[in-house]
Length: 476
Image 1: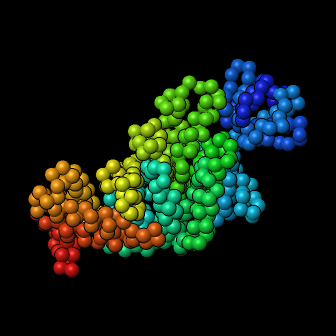
Image 2 (image 1 turned 120 degrees about the vertical axis):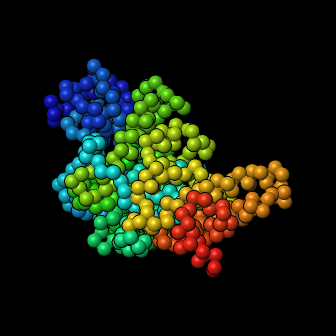
């Protein structure tokens, strides 16, 4: 029965309280727990058995007594209040406003757990999103409706990269000519392109960095921010991305906007999932993570895409830090199975002063081929990208050979590849934290670095593109 309170708890185990099961309790149902101090604590049903219900509290269980506590099952899932005033607001991980402007003036609530998208209703992603970062736009292109994670490591500049993407990301309409100009996160005209930013388990100084950067650059008015700080309860860290994706779904499918969701750090999310699983006494799988880690991550990642009947879309860039830079760790490993590629940050490039330190060879965008070319970016984009990948792969081989026999013993062709590698990293990959390159500038920079190689080495580029784009670079 709804609205009936149950007195007494069977036991209290950290943030989890166990009570006798009421009738018709549902998994993930919201529960109110009242202590003898008069305080009201919200929680969520995390486990059910024949006679008992496990409830995880959003916060501390200090002050709760097994004899005097009261439990009320509210009969509804966790919900987020949504409305036209979402943009420009800052919320905590539970979807509660923390920016001092009060609650949204809206009576619309959505279940944060979302609803599965019928695969038949999905529309294949094909439209290019410009991030202003050459390593992404030129070689690992982001497509509208795609989920493209960034694999980073401790101490690497993924926070700066995330902030730069939020500042610079835009949808362009080349009209076949490759000229940017349909607006960005700070100046979108009709405001059709917006950002949802979610930070999980971050320290206060990191949260302040993001908010200050968004305010200073003027993009905050077109961003919805969800912040779950490091001192917040683990359960809040699990709810935060679901609140962010619920806001994104409202903006995309009810307001017909194109939404880019940036989530950092998914490793903190998975650590919270492992902690909650351990408290519940579940049998651990690889490295102590629960066996359902794959399906849990999929429940977040698969909320991206485009659907029939709506002109809006959701694109995801989840950011995760690989423990010990191990790309085979369960978190990046499973994320790679679910998503359509990855952007990998390289520690060696960082140590050489390259920003952003995007590793050329491990990075991949599986949907890139369908979102570039005439009418989307530029006719030469596919050939240029393929040639840059092939040439940089040869650079890696030549560098390994040089470390064995010495650079002096290399052939003239191999030495030209060494020079190409240095130019590629310093002039193409490397750019300023506030340098926003158009797709035209990115592609032109690619041709400029390719001009370092003998023409007979450029076997992946059509002859007409060599004459149109490469020869003018050589003349300069």
